Length: 418
Length: 113
Image (cartoon, rainbow over all chains, first blue to last red; front, side):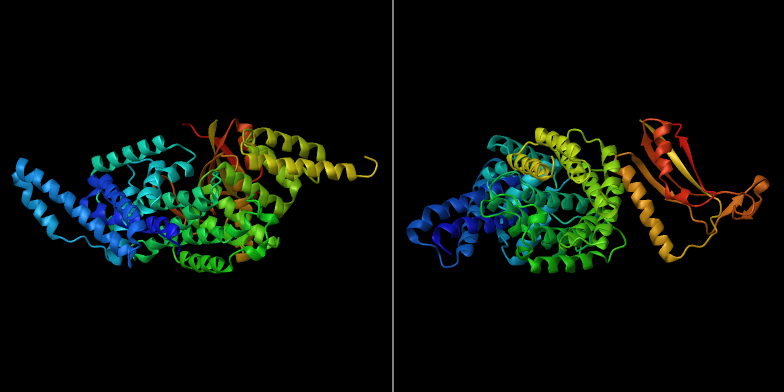
């Protein structure tokens, strides 16, 4: 790997490992210190490597520096403690005796435990994702700000408050007991799901960052499967869902970096290996008694990996959307369900159902109505597309809708006698 | 918005359905429920009430085997919806697949609280 690429690459990989192990070692109350030590370690690498060359084993170099920095910090703390609070000095000795364990096993364990600590119900979902990106995925504050379409200050404040909260709650860095796993796992999965979505549907233009977010979400989800306590059907279902979605990554953008809609995608660019992995995890997921929303979404995503429009495909997708809505209402799911309904029962039936949704502030709603009316009533189709155009916020969305209007007009003028 | 319960009454709950019929029945029911849920008007998917193992406990603790002998109609299940008015709730009820069975009814009642 080229020199200018190796440091960012290492940073992404090793920052999160060092932070997780250090935080586990120092305790959640010193989370920020753990991040600081990891940052200082990389700063030193950035300063020395360009002159002295990259060490033979860069990861080992980083671990040694991090270890020493942690020990130095504790020693400084020890002097303070010896002078001011002699009674606790022995406790520091004990900590110093323990060596910082940077074995593969401890890194994986620490990261998993950290994931559960971060997903503590005391902090907001947004903060959970932010902390996960920072501590477990090694994202810089700038990158997190970019992913959330926010600014550095806001993100810094959010993360600061989240760390304070974890300290205040004295959250332990550990995999909770069996009873608590069930309850906490749900939050962990929500965080990973949102992390993935942040990458998959992100409105930020940075394509590399988006894909990185998805890959990190998948890596963390996979680490849950590696632990018997968290290798559960819902986790398998979530990973299956992620595999199916990310299989289309290459096909979703054209050479001009514009979004390519599902129907216009080149199927040969879909990653078959990821699709097969998805099917494998979906089978694993089916071993539980309960169907979660991840099961349903993974099933829908599976059917989308088959491009041909068959009755069986759309009937299955419709049923999954029905179940999803009964589990939990969401306007996007309601719109998708109506689209599937049109595929199964025809546009006329779907229009009646669509008009009951009355999602008057949603541009997808009017886009859907426009699509449904396209072959039935061109005038109504156009009215709806225009409403959608008016409500759409992003440039890409406006462009897509404008194309639909243009297409309608072309068809109109081609009509004989029109 | 008020909450209404839709109670399904079957004239003959003892009728046996084939697995294929049950499959179609489930699909129709989910299409109907999904349509209500898509409007964010499903409060509770409620529950089905099994026709097997049913008893009627009467005055003086007289227990009879199932309601079917004494009562013409049997309750098969219920769902709870949210609607602007009883009329809207009735519109929901009209789409219920239970009504495909002759003699069956859907009773719409406003929840008292």
